[in-house]
Length: 126
Image (cartoon, rainbow, N blue to C red):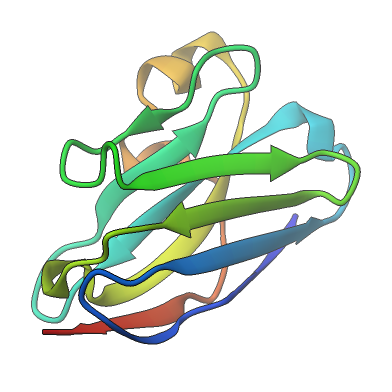
């Protein structure tokens, strides 16, 4: 599975950005997908994940502002980011995990994810 993230950029606080992640490879229907981010000097953290028949799950810090969605026909996952804050500044990664019951239980853990994109930079100015 190959993942290609895009859509990052510079935005003022309160603005919006939409990230996209294009997946390619075999048996994509077997994989769930999510987003993580890593701010300068900090560890990578969970942002949101798409759980197919279940409702999406979000980190508390982005709940109500970010929305994850999937276009199965295009094999893409998007992250719509509204009401951006300076603390949202980070390198954003999309990632894919093999859908098992165990993986769904550990969906916030980056170790659950098998494949990672290269990251796209989001910078939010105050």
